[in-house]
Length: 81
Image (tube, rainbow, N blue to C red; front, side, top):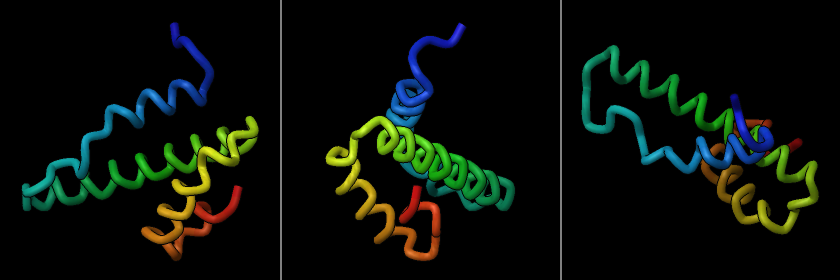
């Protein structure tokens, strides 16, 4: 059974991320899977930030949002909720 709120579970899952998947492996299948995993991580991060904002954690996510927008300027979801 899952414990905690969706926000708590996303915080926990994202804390397990340790950098780019398959870093340094140039096999085509690994490069494609790494891109897929990076996209899923970013989607989870966006969802967690959205939950933080909905729960009133505006002050806690300002720096994180600035970093996300700087790193992904064309990704509309990073700048909005």
